[in-house]
Image (cartoon, rainbow, N blue to C red):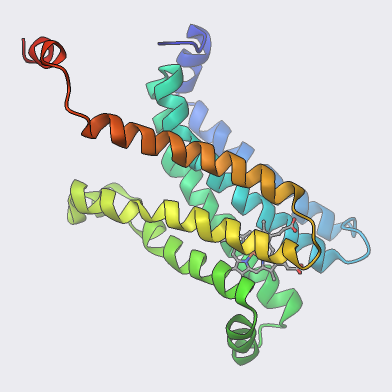
Length: 219
Ligand code: HEM
């Protein structure tokens, strides 16, 4: 079922679409960078920056997970062109998040950072999500897909579900200290819907197909 208007479908296939989406993905970073340069990040700029970049990491993770359901539900195969880029932006933002924390909170003191990660469970969970994201980012290129083989590559990239769960747990744990769960609930609902859709597709694939459909596919 194609519910996306034809001109938009066409635009998504345009050679300029990818560079434009790339620029759009960089805008939050540019905005925060500009805010830092002009001293416009509030009373505690370091905290603001770490949190804002953490938020964007989670948003890009949700966007990446949303590509396949949106592609299938709206009948827009062109959306697949943007999945890899969005996934790499999750990694970009988590690196900026990690660097902001390491620099502004910890002064790049590596032994102190290691101690802090081991001591604070919510940071350990975030760090685990970052570690798990690393092989996904490293194997997101065509050559890596070829080298691994499609089956193994797909299996490895299923880690994204675990990463989404860890990212959410990291956020939940951090906000639990403040008893503030409103935003956590919004992200949890989005991620549950996206993963629920995938689970439903998986069950659909496993269910034996009726003979009529199978015969129609064979002819
Ligand atoms: C996929 C990985 C990660 C995601 C999705 C993520 C996401 C988030 C989010 C949404 C927040 C809260 C922002 C807010 O309150 O609005 C946050 C805060 C934070 N995260 Fe992460 N994060 C990740 C990895 C990491 C890593 C690797 C570290 C450091 C080793 C880290 C350290 C922190 C710190 C220090 C805070 C702020 C805590 C505070 O201000 O009290 N995160 N993160």
